[in-house]
View: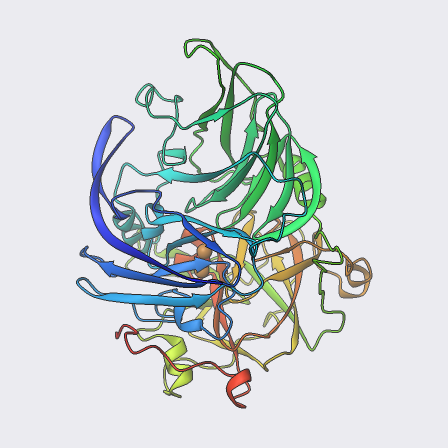
Length: 534
Ligand code: C2O
């Protein structure tokens, strides 16, 4: 193992997309920013220097951060933000993980442009559990906003209305030749016939789950969220914001140019950015003026396509990479996740859209929760987050009557090393919508999934406790539920939230506190001396 050092200069840079240019917040002048190339067991030091007028913090999405919660990154959860002119060194070791993850800003909506890939190679000399590809390529899916994203969300929170949507999706930063303004600059993936490529696909978009397809080629899924899966072939993958998927693509066609497309998945009628981003798979030796083969993309409400992809995902669960699913559960929690409406006298309609978990719309504190926990500061949070909905939940397809939410900075305490099951039940209160829920500090096993109400007696029996997929971000289906299990083996304060940024902004978030306070192995290490102050 080695120590790898990186420097992230957060700077403004003028970018040009869709016929117009605007200054954006970037890392080292690029968006997507630099890829962290590291290996399992490496210690990573990233010095982030803030040269912009916004507060900044960076999250290493999916990195376990075992006992290094101070380096996790969500602003006001594990650290105060890095203020303009200040810097902070994120210091963490990659333990027991290899694969693709992402890093992104974790404050307001800055991650729209501040994000990049984390590529963790296996330990030296350890092969992949599949034939080594000829080449590996990072493919980052994102969004382009003509307007300033910070202004978009601030305006929405003030008015109580839903925010605008992005103006285009992007593949490695470019919408591709889909609009008359973007003939140039689409991403091209050059391939040689007969060779196999591994695409490390990342969804860094703020607000949209995406389908990803390559015309004329199948993809073999081998890993999600930096955990190996049982390989399976598919023509379409589904990827939610925060998720990563590694696929093998065999370039067997000999010659030609093939369209690569990222198109939105949203099974509700609410407004989304409908634009399909495209890129090109280009066989060497093909004349550049030859036509691109077109592919059809799934319609945006193609729930069956989405479900069949999700149902195909299984942990590899080999001798070398066993799935360590908790079989016995110490804490059984039921969390309703959804949108609601609260009265608001200053808002446009006299009400505002809010989002909640178990009817609690989370209020961000003004100092970091992890510091409050570690230094036992009182008055920052309470430990009374409800483990079950306060009003028994019954999804009938029509909106339940308990639309109101309470507010609070309420956390749930888990004893170190206890096992936890959380059933995430979508409420579909306003419009049915998938919620990609992300848990910091842990991977979890997705042991079950269904439509309608979760039925503890019936549904628990059908759980897959053998080879469920292990990941850090999971979609809770519209009007349905997902059950996850994990072991609380990482002391700290760990954020759980919807990775659709608009829902997080509306309050669809909470945090767990994990600690026995019983000595070094069960507690957190002290904070680094340069930890930012609020
Ligand atoms: Cu990728 Cu809390 O986020």
